[in-house]
Length: 187
Image (cartoon, rainbow, N blue to C red; front, side, top):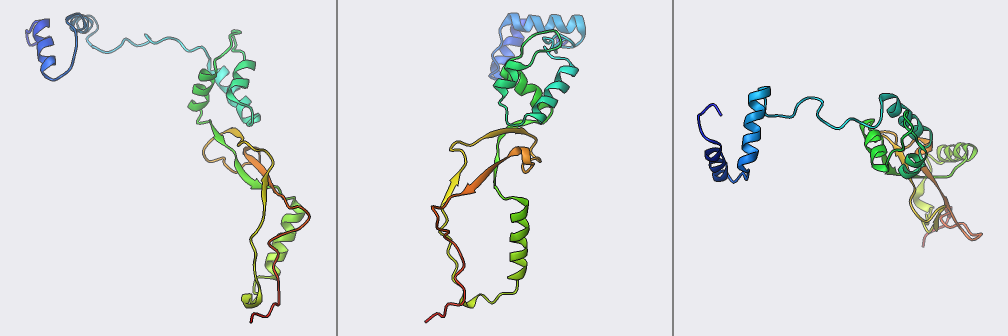
């Protein structure tokens, strides 16, 4: 522009660097630079957002209160402050700005507080147990509560919150496998 080259010469120079640009594209950049002293986009020339800051805060609140709901359900029930509905992709973008994404729920055992205390006491009583005469079996059959994995809305550091986990149970048909057989003399 300031080098005194014509737009065709600039197109030819760009073609040597394997940058394809038309003569009209070069002219537009030159004219924009002359008018605004920059070749970039004008500030505020982007499409305005459909949501306000208040809408984003409300979406964040809905997502953290209903972690098991899908983005499609949230988008179909949420109305912006001016009464518009949002697409699933827009809801996903706004939640991603808040660092909330859809993850698979972590699987944890479904254990009551009483059983957790019993297990801890049992582990403490057998802490110094001599394991020479104990045979351990690990033949448990596992059955998940649901067949397909569930998803939840969370931040990456909230993996083990109770709302972000899926409870699993062990299934046995009246026989518990995996019990310790104690005091067996090995031959």
